[in-house]
Length: 110
Image 1 (spheres, helix red, strand yellow):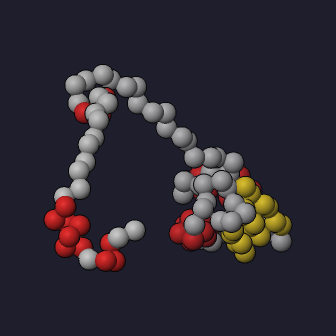
Image 2 (spheres, helix red, strand yellow):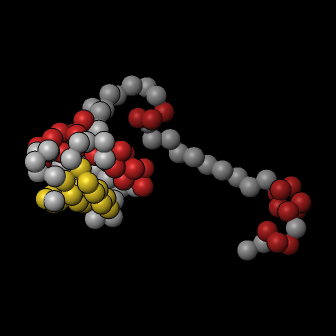
């Protein structure tokens, strides 16, 4: 039995571990799959007579967990100046309603 260790940065939770196992275990020749989302590693034990390591990597890519592929961080959208409140600096002034303080009781005094 041959072993290959793959670095899979896209795994961070148990559902990713399950998805990787479900992608690899049906492959003909895979004998054992150990997956760690904490270490972002996949260890695959396989029969080299029936399966090539490239087929393992391709199955991971097809499942969305390509070895060495990291998450793409989207760039922020270009700002468009319009007249919405998002692009305006608005001063917010609040006042405490004295009736609220009178009805709140002693537990509200700090």
